[in-house]
Length: 530
Image 1 (spheres, helix red, strand yellow):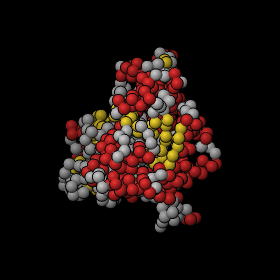
Image 2: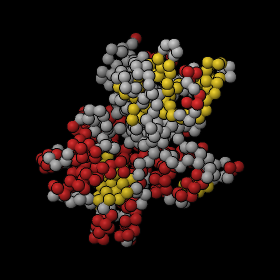
Image 3: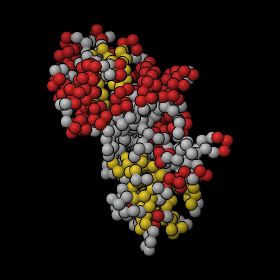
């Protein structure tokens, strides 16, 4: 097919659905002379999820346009990024990534014989590459290195030197892989501009850069391996897919930060050229869209119900995932998955001091087991049968708002809660309070006394309903589906939740944060969180 395309047609295929291209003219010049050489790299950290289908669909475009495509498994980068991949697991994670990404490409019909796969440490530990790292380190300022990695490298209060090296290594990869262009997400733009600035200083050519938009996750924020509720894993069962899509943020008529709609735009349409909405005949029956903008317009006008959109995406997604699931049913790949991503509760030392009867190990008591989310208060009213209780309807990024029955808000003026962004614990077992089921707990700072003082916790400005709240250092853990009330997990962890002297929510002096910043309260320094 590529032989029959003109340079302009190849350029259209290469750049369609991208958010930004740096160096367009150079791309066009290369395409007039020969096929483009492009690479896409992925750090082998957390398990790849369905958002990886977005770059996979672009790789399919590159191959259709005749490009020579290299896929880099950036194992050294994974270690440098705040040790997201422990050194002893690097080799196993590379093997997992290679198997799962090849399975994804096969699922969408991409011929593997047209691709080149390479591991970072195959060349990044060479004498020449190491010397270039030192040469680059003598030119790049700390400010530039930190700025370049701001949206990619994990940001912590006391960053490791390794995180400052990360952007420079990614820049050097362009030269050592001998490509014309690097492809990645728009979150890597600052690394790309660092490469354009400094590679010529080493005597190397400036490359072009192709940038995908960042596809929202199911909670409305970026889809992330470390945020369990925001993503669908490639090996999730059909039941898990249904459950996660049901909870996904997909407000009627809202096309902003809609991860379900974005998946249709950036994956299903490029791969299939059409999308079928499946629905009951009484609601108009099935309808096939061949242009995404028409689907988006009908959803914005509320002619398509979120439930029908989710159900149709579920069908399409399971068709993509089924070949991957089948491949990973083999004993060899099951073993690889378990070794590359060991259960934290079963790793050496995880249960130290927690032996129970029969020699079993207790589940680790860590704050990542709490499903804490940002929510938006929709309504507040008094409980019909209890003057000291209030009912709140709170949007937590799911199809329906949750009902929260609370006594603490009796201390807060109702008008202060209406339309307010708050923080909730969402995986307590629902319990009835005076006949009405409470489906979550509103988290507040409080100080005992006469009178008792209570303030809701405040998420960072710009937060969206459904965004996960983490304790720093525990971002990678997975929340329990439902906390077992008999094990008192919440009660044991809650003891160490409090407000610092600068009004920041914390657990054992580790801050509660979202991707946008820290959780705070207005004035209650030293208060408890409950």
